[in-house]
Length: 303
Image 1 (cartoon, rainbow, N blue to C red):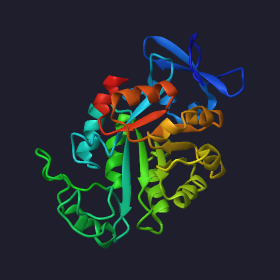
Image 2 (cartoon, rainbow, N blue to C red):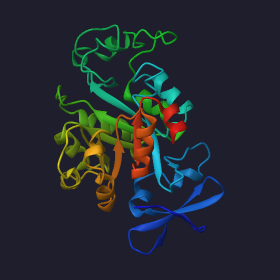
Image 3 (tube, helix red, strand yellow):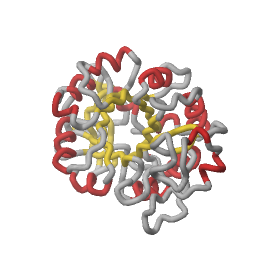
């Protein structure tokens, strides 16, 4: 759906046709847009008037809005999935962060991409075989200068850091290789305790797990995450009660109508992982709701 500026109206004022409303934006003076109705529910529009909160996405010259989410934080310039990376993402102007979660031997939710500690920390072996104390003892700086002593953070620690910024948090559950029984409920509990339910969107390559989240008693936004070239994934996602599609950027070259089809069904489209400026602009022109990137500073400059 193409968005265009309209006159000044109150947030949430219902328009015809049904399915749209006008949202006032505190940028470039008093500017409003005509937006799909689900954006008012799924995005922290009302929070824009709250001091200290950032917009969850930014207006493009073409009238559309595309958010910038930092992949594992600002991972091109800081150790991935560390507090330093998430802090830097905010400093670079990211609208959100994407992160990965696993479970420790004592059932704590930790933020790390791999099922093993070997690649990104000084530890070895599966995360699930280590207690939180053991995981915390390892250096997660990945040998990067200036970051020595960074530890694998818990999900609680990341949410506490991010909470004052207003950034969206995309939590990817890494349970396609290691099943992690109970991971969904553990993550939901942490998010609810942190008071971040409205700021979080979940995703997983494990679509059974993603469906559990989408159909949980706790209202949740969930994105169908995939890398294959699927036929009509919007229909598949809708059947599973997903609120978003999370395709790889290359998929959009095969099926450029994806965004239009998803928006027609009330779903958002958040594309990963995009670092090329030209590709970023093309996706924004197509109407992508968010782009997930390792370089939020470069993405902001491109958009």
